[in-house]
Length: 101
Picture 1 (cartoon, rainbow, N blue to C red):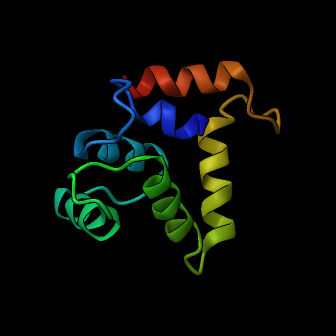
Picture 2: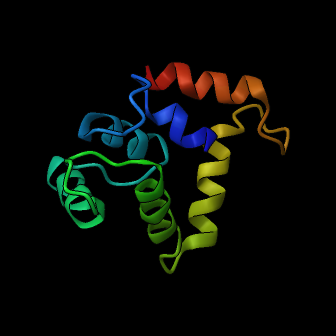
């Protein structure tokens, strides 16, 4: 839930295309506009053009279950754990939130 809240930078309770693009880029995934809109279209069950928390879980689970999921998870962890402590601290989360705007 914390990741969702970090990516929902305007606090609206949903992630819009701009927020999703920033989130995917910060996690090291491809984030071309066409890809973002296709992801939203595929996941947006209620056709609002935005992603709510349940839809966010679906999309992140799908991306993490790709064949290189362990490598992807390590990559994401490294992005958060920039001080290489082996833990994601509150300071790490705050830094990511600040980077996302």
